[in-house]
Structure formats: structure tokens, C-alpha cells
Image (cartoon, rainbow, N blue to C red):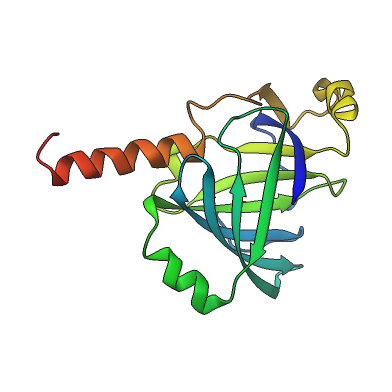
Length: 180
């Protein structure tokens, strides 16, 4: 178990030099991520990450994460490593849709930029996550010093993966029951 302390920001139109999220040719360290939700409250998510360094794929990881469903500055998080076979088995139980994104590890190790790809990319806002060691450090962070960071969305649920996937899943359930 660990405590995740992070702030999220929408991204401005500026992109890191040498990066195009749709090109597949990455000069910066990136992860191609596929993730989906098994449960919404608490949040139970599976994720497959493909790590790339200077255009070369170096590692695949699979994990299951459990988090508090409440969006706030800090929350408890549990991560469990999975095998590919375990991941594929759990993937059949995903509620809603699988989300695809490219995560750029930019600048300091605690700043990541998430750009959505795949057929559902227009449902989601691209955003940055900044992880901190303490809440005091998070509160003291000044986003205006970085021209990539736009409006802060920490704690906002309306366009989160979880809320969009949950809405789509509930719609599919109602459709199956003839309650559209």
C-alpha cells in the first residue's frame, strides 16, 4: 500500500520538443498504456504498459490497482503485479471501455503527460499528472511556471476515466435491459 499524492492539469497546446503522440516515433521516454476498470467504487483498474526508450521497446508490465474512488489530493493506492495471462483473463471483465494513451515521462521524474490515442480518444482530455512526496510540496507547487500546464483538474470527476467508463458501462447495461 502507498499514498498517492498528485495534482492534475489539462495540457496547453504546447507539446514537448520531439514528441508527436500519434506518430509512434518517440524520442522521449514513454509508456503506451491500455487500461480498464473492473469496479468503480472502490476503483479497481487493470493496466498494460509498454515502455519505450529512444524508439526501442524495453519492457511490458501488467498490474491491478485499487484506489479510493474519491478524487482528492492524496489517496490510498494498492498495486499488484500481474502476468500477461492474468491480465488477459481479467480484461474480459472490464466494465465500459478500454482506454488507450501515451504517457510521456517529461522533465523531472514526477511529471507525466498523458495523450489519448485509439478510437475513443476524443472522449478524454489530455492531461498532466505531477506526483509529490508530501501534501505540503503539492500545495506549494506553482503550475504557472510551466507553459505545458493549463487549468487544474485535481479532484474533478466529470471527465475522469472512471466516470466516463462507468457512464458508458451503465448505458450498455440499460441497453441490454431495454431501458435506454
